[in-house]
Image (tube, rainbow, N blue to C red; front, side, top):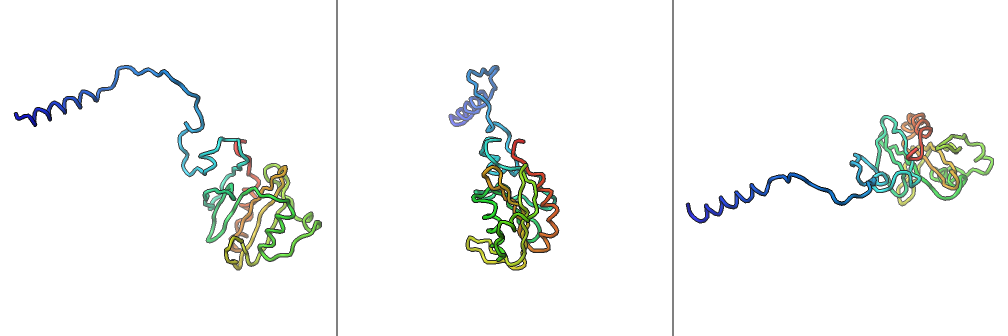
Length: 196
């Protein structure tokens, strides 16, 4: 056997001898478990992955059949798609009830409501507070440089939760929004603060 063969056998012997498991392992340090130690959740939002549960006003709800959950972002706490172009966005906004109602109506070219018009809107409960039900149809101009979309509808609720304006806004083709309106109302009724 030549020198190369001997070195190969010695190397293999050393490699195999180093693969043994130790007989005993002792742990000399401990740390407190955190949410980072939990197993990863499939399809988790950024909020679910990086925020401590119960420390932010993030909302949770049961997703109606046929709605596809989308990633949340700075403007949408919860986001869904349905049909051929329908969207549902749950968010927290600034301002007041009247300003937000009239902003939504303005996106459809509708006239702004005065105080009596705002008072006449249907009342809907969301996350334990009374909100205002808003509907509109027509050409939808979502803003942010997007083109107006003809034949669209809006249904949703705007509520003041102690200075935070909670919005749940459904937009999409008129027939698709009409078909999803009851699912939206059920979704709104089931919304809750995360951790409750």
